[in-house]
Image 1 (cartoon, helix red, strand yellow):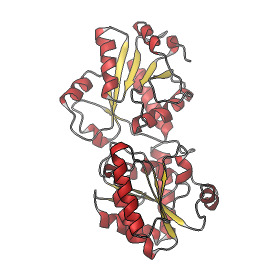
Image 2 (tube, rainbow, N blue to C red):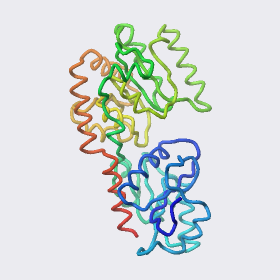
Image 3 (cartoon, one colour):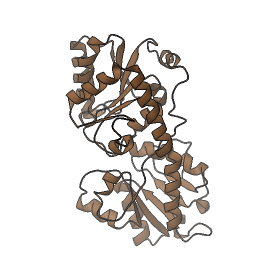
Image 4 (cartoon, rainbow, N blue to C red):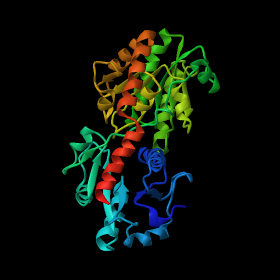
Length: 350
């Protein structure tokens, strides 16, 4: 339990269900702590390993930490900006408010109002910054290139997870729903696998609530195609980095995305990527004529199928593009770089 008197940055998480924002917090805070940032979380849905404040610790926010004029309240959702605003402006607590936006859509009037009251705003991509009606700093998400790293023995990586070590696997990871384009991945595999008997496909992720019928429909489509033993729905896993190590190709078929980490996770694992032009995917792939992966249009099933076929049928290409993707992540998308950039914003405020 951290001493509130020493905490300079508070990261609220006011959503219980796991989401991309929650995952970002879980991955970033340990790195920020390791770098010496005096940071703590507050709220449900986070692992006990993270430094966490109690609700009553908020009563101490009228006094800044030693040697500082303010603390930072770093929000990533509307429901986290609002309490920060109340504490700073109504209760007169010694806070500076930071908001990170990953959204690539027009904001509601309420969200615009909240953002306008922040002391600093961070956009997770250049695209995102264009939707903000105020100055912002672009700090792109990074990942841990040690956690997401190529296997030393791919056959062993596959067999460890119960997969056939002699087969090639194409993967699509994330929530199973229409927005994520899981149906496009399934349809492309139904087209491609019959002519490629040494390939199979993995869908890692789960359908929640109203999306369960969508997954059920996909499973029925796979069964009707006679591919239930080759298009595998493996569910949600906390050791998703191990599943990336089983892949020979990764496809990110999203129809919409705020930022999206899966292409970075695949590239860090030296897996070639086919991704739709949504979220920050074009910025992640650097859009260098296919050097670090292939970008396709949204909802372009034919383009997805053709791009996947090209990689499936060319092992040297998979290796070349996979290695280039890993170098791209190491150079531009390290989570430590993200943490240091956030630390510079905090220091400028407190």
